[in-house]
View 1 (spheres, helix red, strand yellow):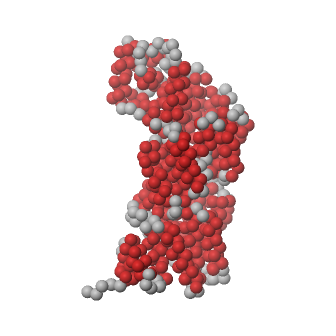
View 2 (cartoon, rainbow, N blue to C red):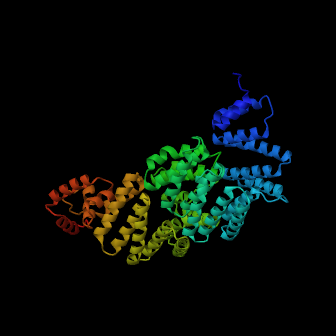
View 3 (cartoon, helix red, strand yellow):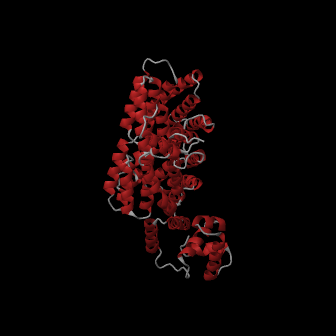
Length: 544
């Protein structure tokens, strides 16, 4: 059998999705002959699947010049639109805008084709992100819906649903908007939408969930993205994107060791392909390092985030606050708030409230908490509502209104527990302790502190552990505890609130069997035989 020429072999490799063989074969052929435009397209595509995005973009731009030179305006416009998407994904919005303008110019005066729909979609998504006005996006969705009925391209109908969904969420119709987004994914799951567009849609929606503090939806969409990427190349850009999103959720759930091991390298791999996602990964790494007391490491990670265009706030400000520079921290948050749009502001408003209270700027604290409440009400997101309840509870506590703060903080605690947000749960237990102590509920307050301390220890949140241990040492001197250990006091404080062994185990992150052993030791040390008697002893000795 005669040996195939390099071009034929490379084309066959491309057809069977053997991306390395296709790339290598086409590059080899290119050294001796000028590649035809379809072969340039295949080369750019193979490079993209391999995650070699700068190389892919270079070849795609060469392809664009070939299409434009051949007078194929619709095909050249389509390539310019895809280049705009890819440059924007990398984080270079100026170059992305330039390619979009080229596409717009090429399509001027041409009869309607699918390319006009792709152009309308991309410019509408960009406008929605920058201006946050849902009106034009709604109008574009209607226009795309009509166009989908005239053009044989199922992607246009998907785009119509995506724009309708994004506009609905931005307008405060969150459930309605996500119903549209769920429907938009049907052609994606059917394989009718090109991966470069499908991956961007997934990432856009997951980022929206993250902005809303909606961890439940974020888990569902990240799971769907993982399922979709599993059938793609292992070097596929969105395989790395998926892992960053998964690690953001792992971080919220307290898997900080896993985050520290993986997220830095995962972000490094995305810098040239998906810049703002790489920045999100660096920011998450900075957060874990900050909360674990690694200030230098956190600052370095925040610097990497800033280097790819992601503002590392509020983490960087909170790092300065932990170092004792409260004024600088608050000024950084003020600056970030001045430059942020509505949903991006939401994640800054809770720390702004707490830092303003620390600086005795009551007016700023009230304004920040009130804005967060309005944002939460508009978007009807459980996560935003929990942030708003925490901010309002902190303001009420600072005003000496512990009884009014308590229901706000309890509402936030319920949401954080449901979301499996470990650090936020610990923090809210500290605020609950302050509220209950102000109401004379010393036992319940001690139980909340014990819960917070147990979570901080499990996370490795060293600064918080040391702070609470110092507070405990300063506040319990002279009490007769009959030789109870610190852990036994934590167990007893929770038992005194009526908690079951299972609830104590969950709060302290230990097994029920271990709780039982602690209880046996406690009963022996204080000379009681029932939980009721132990609770009474705890109250008498200031443990509850």
